[in-house]
Length: 447
Ligand SMILES: Nc1ncnc2c1ncn2[C@@H]1O[C@H](COP(=O)(O)OP(=O)(O)OP(=O)(O)O)[C@@H](O)[C@H]1O
Image (cartoon, rainbow, N blue to C red):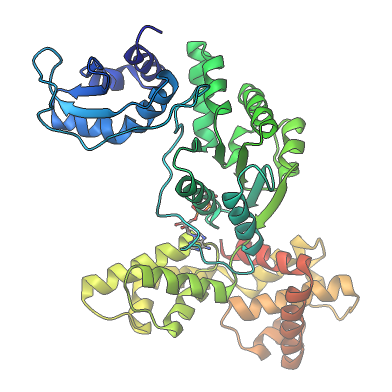
């Protein structure tokens, strides 16, 4: 490569559309005559855009190209007519040590969002293990568990944890080469490399990372060529004790359309689940989010919202946002009445969907028993336990009274329902599989 700017242009060409390249990169003038690097843009708009979207890439490539620290400045102007002191000095001053073997940009993939950190991640039984493992990884990348594989349903905080790891590592080591990437974008990268015959470049870029955070790995399913590329990257990073963190919607072995070699490698480190939060945790999340927004939210109101939204945290956040917007618009404090009005549609649909019949059918299907066994008098454990779980769910999810619930389960007494609810609460605490089954059923009934 003749010059640093040639390298930058080549990489931008490979990663941008023709139109993007012509709009943002072509008008730039590069000047490193004085030893420092200046990138001159024809107007503020282009300058700000380039700085915001591409500065990190350019910095990373500079690390790779120059064998000494370089300052990069963005300014308005043209090379021939612009004096060395830029007319509009730009804010980015960059000086990074250039490791001799540095090969890749500091950042590939998407940006890490500083808003997702461990401090604002509420922990509870549903995510305790995942959070603890993520924190340990963040404090000792490449040392503890590699890869860390976090799986769970939608909107349960997997991306949040991934980003929290990235933020923590970056804080401790600003020069760490970190990439947060969605698996779909990785697929795109591979397609681009395929079209441009730049597989080596792609491999080098990923293999030179210190931390690879890859989100929703299930999107690699059935993409054989991408899987093959990822296989090399994965092996190389692990071999060099570079940390990989992966998220997925299911357990590694259950990802269909994924090469067995990858499945088994994903399970090499630590696999942890995030589960749907239980009621108390949903309340804690609401209170924390309200506090972060400087909004006063009473606990009983938070309980009410948390009871309406059981599926996942994203939905919970959405409901809270609606309530806050409603209260601001009407300039009224957040009371139970206001929440009921703001969430009227949601409340109507929740109570419509979850009926006792629905619960009985879902639980029976889940445990592969007959729906009729929900009403029968048989008391063998394999029938009695699902029946008790269904009763507990009916109590939690419907507005039916205890006698009404008992009646719907083959004319049982309300004390039987109370006993079932207590028993299920106890088993959820003491038997992990029952705790998990309960949460899965809860999510599938309300999701
Ligand atoms: N325990 C938590 N504490 C605070 N916020 C949370 C928690 N869990 C999730 N959230 C918030 O919920 C929203 C959805 O979370 P996130 O995007 O991380 O979910 P996800 O599991 O990655 O979902 P998907 O599978 O759809 O990508 C985010 O705004 C996140 O900050």
